Length: 231
Image (cartoon, rainbow, N blue to C red; front, side, top):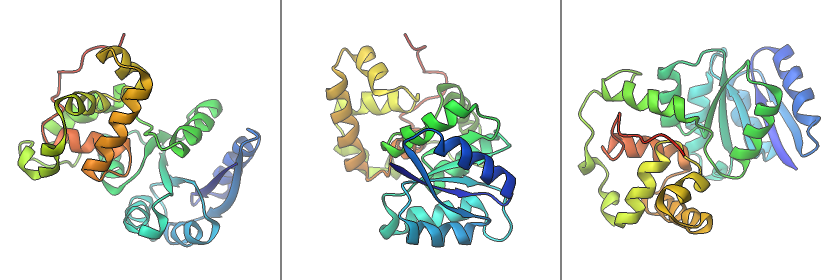
């Protein structure tokens, strides 16, 4: 069972998500929080695998709560999906920078919500290619609350530890391609691709694929407009 924590200041929304998730058969809602502080406390006591975290909550908001959870070594296995009514580039960027593994808007279809929980629980990032490409383009022009300095490889010395193939894989991860899609693009097996991604995360000390996207952009490895359409 995937243990899920719901963090939203609206009880009705939490109740709706609980019904949807627990009807899936492999998800158990282990707690509900009405603000960020409660979410942090419950993350520690309930051993959640995934937190569905609203951004706008009274007191400590979802972004700050996500940052604290990601920085807590005792909560290293907890994955956060930011859930909000706003598909804002700035929110997406801040969510990724604070350590979120995914980003969904609240009008997501029920089956997509359940799939998202399963994907993130497996340790993968929940980032659609369209959102990722738009985000990278926005960041490159100084938008989305991102850095206005040019991307700099020097800011990420760990990149020098990557092989040429690993750099290729990382650039495709930054396009939000799945392991299967990357394997087809580079004529590799999915297992080999998965191994490359795992090694890249270890070398760059990245929490998950979502952080790899941020690193790829900020280092200049992901260049806006360079994405090749998926097969």
